[in-house]
Image (tube, rainbow, N blue to C red):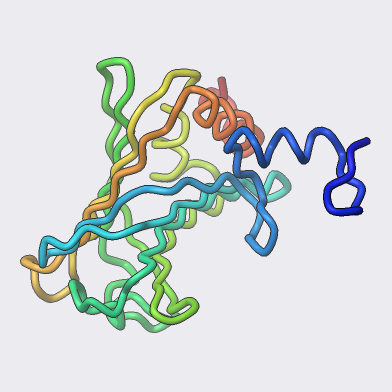
Length: 189
C-alpha cells in the first residue's frame, strides 16, 4: 500500500492514474473514457470526450460523444436534446473504427443532453447488444486504431461536428474487455 499526501492509495489505482488508463476516473460515470479532438463546421478545433460503457444484465451498450464547448453554435444542439427531440429517430450519427487496414462504420440516431455549461453530450444507446453500437464495438480488438464520429445537423446539412479519437492498443483491449459481456453470442470475441 502506498500513501499519497497522507491518504492510502492502492497500487492498482496508482497504476491506473499514472499509465493514462481512464476507467471511471473520479467524478466521471463508469466506462472507458477517451480524449480527442472535435472540429465544428466553422473549422475550429477543440477538445472532445468519448465514453463507452456496457451494462451486462441488460446487454445494453452506450457510446457518448461530449462536445466540451457546445457554445460555438456549429450545430443546433436543441434538435437532439430531450425525449421529444426532433432528431431522436434520424440516423445522423456516423461512427467508424479504423484499425489494421480495416474499417467498420455504422450510422445511428443519437439523443442528447446539455451537460455542464457549455458542454453537450450525444448518446448512442444500444439497449439489447444487437444494434449499431454492438456492430461498431465488436470490431474493436487488440490493435491500436482511430474512432471517428461525424455528427450531422438535423435541419442543415452544412452544420456538422467531426470528432477523432486515437486509441492505443491498451485502450482498445480495455474497451474490448468492457463490452464483451454485452455483445450477443456470435459477436463477442
